[in-house]
Figure 1 (spheres, rainbow, N blue to C red):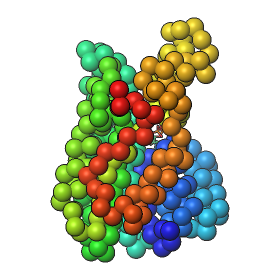
Figure 2 (figure 1 turned 90 degrees about the horizontal axis):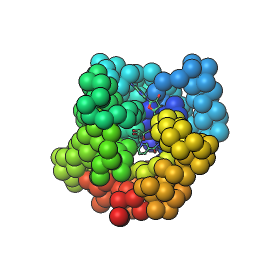
Figure 3 (figure 1 turned 60 degrees about the vertical axis):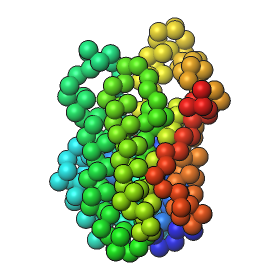
Length: 260
Ligand code: NAD
């Protein structure tokens, strides 16, 4: 379905971003990977993805805290593939602490990586999308872009901001062939939430599996983790013709979390 298209996915060396990269590549889409990790592991991800699906896959290590590096990332993807048709703003970090104890430098890092980086990528990638008359921008927000939980000041503020940015960009691009949507996952078992599972397990004196079940029971009525494949398939749908008129939305994938 996406033969000949090219996607830039920030934070795609693990977890949800890598899941989205795999699903898009399986649809014939070229992929620019980004994120941190060991050089040899990233190279293996890159070459496996390219071989498995016969698409071009590149990697750029831009730090999402740096507007200059982000500009270079978008330029590199455009020169490698001839354009960025699909932009997935997915890089993100988490920190949990009461607001009085929340380190100001961690607040700044969360806002930079989880929110401002999306402004910078869109700022650089949108002109090319407009020229080609087609583009898909998908922002990985969170249920925490729609509702709050305690002890996550930076994350909640950034994700609510990202949902707001999504709506704003949708209005600016309406009717241009470019859409902008946010996906809002609930608990998805990735590196990002392992510290929270471990903390819960420690507090309850149980193993990690039981700790995970407690986290789910508290917020996610389905009591099942969202999978990265499900999120990848949602991005593929948002890239399809059926989704031409879907823009400015924030779509929960949360086992009923935000229905409560
Ligand atoms: P993850 O830790 O597996 O992935 C995060 C990715 O971002 C990694 O590739 C990492 O290298 C990259 N990254 C981190 N800091 C970066 C930086 N400064 N510059 C460039 N890349 C950087 O976690 P994940 O759960 O896959 O998270 C992906 C996105 O999904 C995040 O935006 C997160 O907030 C969101 N999300 C996750 C969940 C969940 O339950 N796991 C739920 C809702 C939303």
